[in-house]
Length: 411
Image (tube, rainbow, N blue to C red; front, side, top):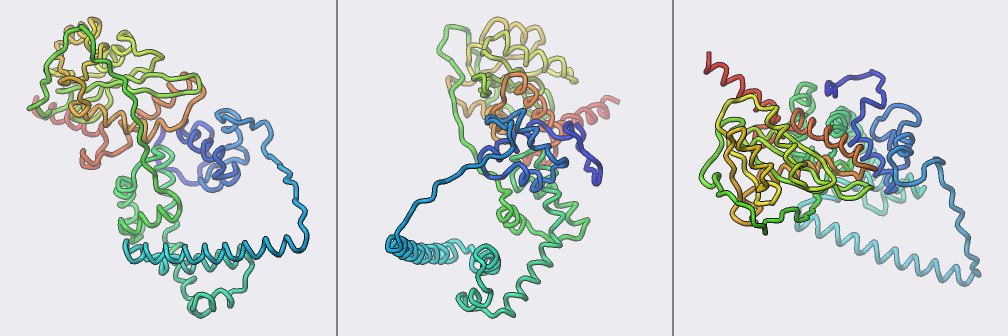
């Protein structure tokens, strides 16, 4: 996957990740955009690119690109129409009073400053949508036409200065659709400074909010651990131990992921120091023979000859003979939580959460498509997504840096 920014270069279907395609499909099928609006909003090249994605990945029938619905018109007498209009006028008046008080409350209690920030935009949209004369709107709001036009010029100048911001935001969002605003700001800040764009973090969040680019947190929890079994359980070796180098501690966990075919299970093994996902396996069941494949991938990717600890919950897959034999063969010491306490395996739970809340957002059609999405997501997580806990470095950067340091010490 190429992550270098290119401008003016024709893009093909392969230049867009599966996660990005699925995010666009979901937005269109929810009715937030038409496929043409989505194509324009996200700068997607090609006349029917989004329509192709909808036909391939969508849950609706997109064999026809447009849908026409004829709504029957009700018949009213003049007296009924007058009564209906009077009710609507009264309802609108009451709604206006309520909205006015809502704005007052937000300004007074939260310091939102909505009147100052949004009144010019609101007047403009009302004038265009409702075809109301500007003089009437300015008189109703208590401002002069001269003041309105001055404000429009200021907003236009500022918007022109911030045009590159959308380009930068959309570039990174195509790889990480739900990356948080704080990380996103730190990632694009050097380029903003290089272009001479003055934009503080608070104003950047205002920009994201104004353009509907803020992400909403998702909370999901399903128990995948069965610790009530007869197999041998191991003590927690991490209670007073903190890794100081890569591949000293591996943490493992299993999480569920859904597709149109049903529920699947994703096993992950992560290096606790660098936060790099070293091994993974997606399967239809939580069998020990499936889960151990993630460990085997981790062992193949190891680059250090260090004594290591493997930490997990007390799930029967990790306590199984096949899994413990794989650890024993590599000389890796097993460590487990005390009973069912997810906080004792918090890092592994956190990695699960990042993948599910930022990458694995969309229901794939089948497990083959889901495997592609998982592979892409883990690559982006390891190679592109910065971590605040890693001083805004990526897991692979920290992992490789540790390797470089070890070579220096050796030589």
